[in-house]
Length: 180
Image (cartoon, rainbow, N blue to C red; front, side, top):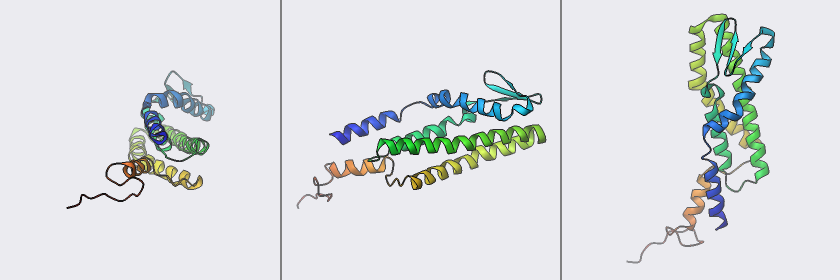
């Protein structure tokens, strides 16, 4: 019964909405970008940075709330991994992704100011549609290797419940077939 309650608790934690991650990472992201661009005299408003007469609005997609949420779900849904290791892995995922996101935002601002909207759109879409997804996968692979995590999110739980189900004999892991 302990495993089932643990699974339900971990499953419920996965339903935290994207907006929570936006709320947490928006201020950090915009202020770090602001401070990194201080030599260019940016103007910081509620949700935008203005440089060189151009305003760069930070939307939820710019903050990449979905990526932070995905790391959260992947880490929280790991079975049989202690909390300390989960926290370290989660913070590592967040840190690595945050660095890349800041780099991406700063790069896009410079491209927009130096080369214009056409190049901004091209690089922005390339990052958004391809590079970010590949980077999220690489961060996940690197972090599970560093922390020697052998668990597979959700799969290990499904395997555990299957072994306990009526599809198998209890404890043996073998299927039970009716006698003819």
